[in-house]
Length: 102
Image (tube, rainbow, N blue to C red; front, side, top):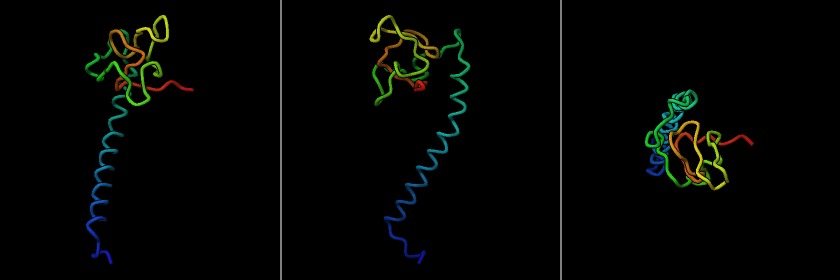
């Protein structure tokens, strides 16, 4: 019975193994990234390049929904960030994104 595995089943297993390996790698990296961002003080903010900052949202995630975002004078005004150096768009996004608690 186990010797009669079709090519589709073999492909599915292989794809599953790749996905599990990718998930394990991502899970292993989270504590390192979380620690780095958690201890970023005022003088040690990350560069926009290091967190892959962009001036547009990623899916539904954007800076104005992030705990690190410090809003400007109005909801659409440029603000700043506790983690990223420089001015930050409320519609921007970076790898340091951490959603606000509801």
